[in-house]
Picture (cartoon, rainbow, N blue to C red):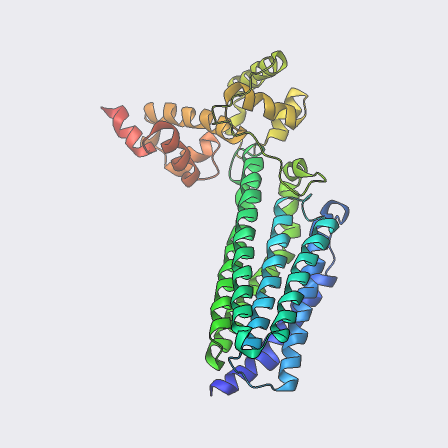
Length: 378
């Protein structure tokens, strides 16, 4: 029964799915190709990856090689794991920083992976059979080191992405790409499973590994294709990361002690921003972005962002939410919640929802909105 299920899954279901997803990734039309150059490049890479995976499964089905837990099969599993870790890490970072995944970067990293993999297999065949286990364990250690490096690299770029979003949007627009870290750490989990599978290859573990991998690949492909619908919402702030360097430019943390002394221009602009907030209550707009504020000030969003960072010591999102929390506290103190819900309060003060209101309110005031209401009654 296990062999029948294995043949059904690996000969028909999985190759067919990988072929379909590969074709979609390669040939589905992409609007605004000029503005999505890195995405186009990354999607082509992923499309080829799906097709190669499909071909590999078909070749395995044709040859009908028995599943044995020898070291050569384990070496092949590790090599596939390294390739998957590289492709998924760099493709996902490309979604967070549209200036990251250049052809030069891709070629350099591909060369490193290719050379180390070829060298590992060359040593595997050159060394006597009694010493091949050491080659396998060394290759596995290299795999673990690469995964640790990719985790650290992804974390740096994701932190940069969150800073950009919080300096551009007044609410949780950054959550539009929340699936990216989920996809990355899921891929990391698949990579760990691949390492465990390489240490113990059996028909059961092979079937389990194939099923887990296929589910992940399928979900990833669907979300990756749908990225073109998400991109326009976050396109402008991501443009700030465009540069030739492959390392992210560090964004100063407004909460650190290394405060930048505001210039006279910063102070004048900040006065204008404060006036707009107080007279027009701009913070009540749930879709407020720094681009909207910059247009009213007649400045670029970068200039407005720097003025807020330098003068207030916080990012744009925190600055706007301080106004929203203050307004929410004022309304609560007047007994507003006696006749309205927290959802209505969130909408009235500019938050996207009650969860956002609750989180920001407790962070600023130290208590929840309901606790603040109880305190106001006493």
